[in-house]
Length: 290
Image (cartoon, rainbow, N blue to C red; front, side):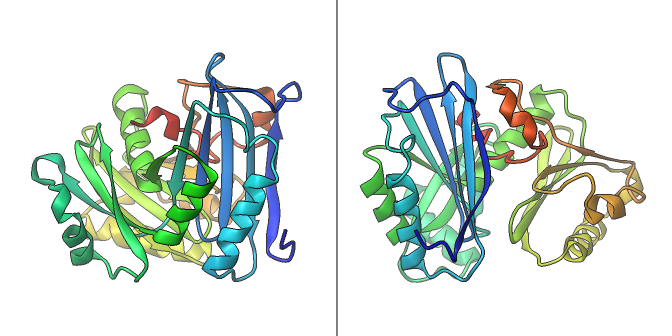
């Protein structure tokens, strides 16, 4: 493996969990240009028993990136097992949402092209968001799809924003969450979601390099939406810790600033308590999304 590019950032495993199982497990993957993460759900127990995440710290071209993913999967005794279901989640800032009543599959290239400059070598994909009652349309590198086709006999594809929005809406409508705004922090990008009366009224993804970038975009969006921070209950999910300057700088301005919790739809091996419960929000929720 190209060690100069790859670091295993997290590795959580139930000590009694063994490879060689057949079916009765769900595999979830989350793939971005800077990270590759996966987790395995034991569907008999409905319990997560394994999760690992790799980070790419040096610039990696598409060919090298795909080669690294192939090496990680083929060299991992768990990832080459037989799974009842495989979900591959692609992370990118490009997506557009079309209400179900207006969506036409034949028009998806036009929906995407109207909103984003799509690179050559991409194919246009779509997800149905059942709670939002809309479709997410997004580009996927054709070479990545080819790699996934070679690695897995059958899998379902999802854009990360589909899982994020559906999970947030579920928490708001059925999980007792009372937040007015969510920020989802990941490597290189973060997302802002604003909700009113259980409905999503704003979603966007922003690139950042420092916590100050996040503060700037967050308060800009609040101003543009004619909101006031001191009236907002803010919930943070993703890779931002309680001791981060982001959290410390946000707390004085908002009505409340809290961290998300894990879904109670699933169980988690005790080893998962080694990371904050709001980390890997998308990866651990995608199995609840249609």
